[in-house]
Length: 401
Image 1 (cartoon, rainbow, N blue to C red):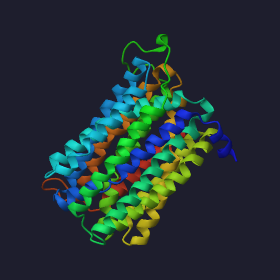
Image 2 (image 1 turned 30 degrees about the horizontal axis):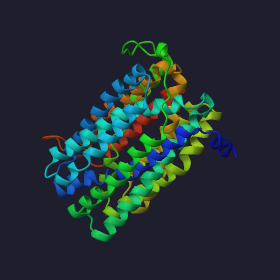
Image 3 (image 1 turned 180 degrees about the horizontal axis):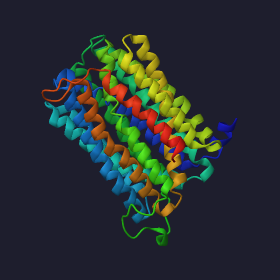
Image 4 (image 1 turned 90 degrees about the vertical axis):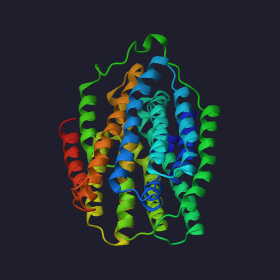
């Protein structure tokens, strides 16, 4: 009943941004989990290169997030940057149709993440600007639920394509991947149109706009939160390694997509209630519980050797996401309450997370398969490392922030 009452008061902008996220993730999830398999199975790329590609792409996005958040504060408007970001990611998709080597895939991931970097902080700030303080949890939870429901639908579509084109082959076929790229352009384009037509900008008063870009002046609690998030993210490498771990354990492409679909279903169903819960209790504790669950899941991925274990781990991974992603963004608004600096706060937060993904992904690839003459420690190593850092981050968030 609490969630139902909260939903009734959610403004139009939240619903429109949720629909935009839904459509964009239908497109994204048709492809994103298959890109590492395309690199490994079709192009023959080593896992360390996969980590570098993901890390470089996310680092690019992160640097842009920092600036785009501040720029939306400076302009006093968020919608234009949000449209530009979604549009650029859509225009980059045809590159996957002509990619014959890993640099072409790197270019796609660079442009895709550049678009994400442009849009993420302004979109989050626009959503926060559109709601009251006691609606932040449910609003961000709803947006994440829509985003993840789109991922679930996108994965179902991807599973259908895989089943029809290549059935139960363990390796990804290039014709399967190219067909999915073509169809993914449709919802990606629709997402941009929804944003243009239905989202209304929230204009900041001119006197409230920051004169220059500066990282100083944020609340000390916000600064400490950033430190803890960076520590956690250092062990939270790209989810591409979860896909590769599942394949390493013997799962077919179709089974891997089904597992990720289960993850997204759990995430989608729980994100809204988790956000609503965080409006009623200490948001930090919701995140701490999520990080503890993450540590258990990564320990499970390190030890798993049967498919039923992977199914259970992917489902539990969805619980972690539901408890942390939207709630974390609501907590940013709590710790940086000045609307004139809210875009910059989201830029710094998203940027800090993304910048840490480069070393995190490189470390994960090196721990697993090695670099150069170093052979690495095997598939369990990056997950044990990530689980240990998650435990430390949870302790610090509880006792230090």
